[in-house]
Length: 114
Length: 112
Image 1 (cartoon, each protein chain N blue to C red):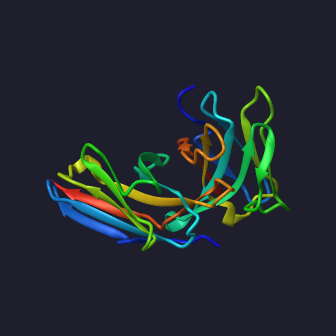
Image 2 (tube, rainbow over the protein chains, first blue to last red):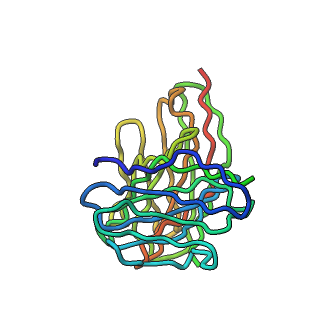
């Protein structure tokens, strides 16, 4: 498609439960990025993919967060055993090729951990 | 690591006035500088960007200027309209990693 699609729009989980978020990049884009936006608008980079390969995972809290981009499937971000501080809006972005830098963002998934 | 500072944090203008938002970056290798507009409940929308080989770029009422020597870039919005009200973010990529480092955002309010 012409836009980055993210589902679900909202997700509510009790502390300790699992959360799974999905992202479909713009058709033809090879790079996918996940960002977390917390209070005061701060954006934090989590992970990026080049097609189905992890490109940069330096922002991922590895003990509970995992992500995948498999062929012919939406990319996913999974949080095991959610914590209150995981409450945030999670954005997916895609870009056409490495070095283009132009990233187009989806509408986000708001995760609330209670 | 790369750091992007953005000022002001809030900006209120009268409709028709101009608005200017400024950002400073730390990594001299950065060569691409986008500006995003984020409306309430929506994702960031890329509104304009500039690469390091030019000093200014315009698109209708918005423009971005870049000063590589001073390592700062600015967003200029002329003839502001109420629909320009949003949070604006500057960003710069980590060289060779492509991920963006964002500024802290500027909440622009345009009063009719």
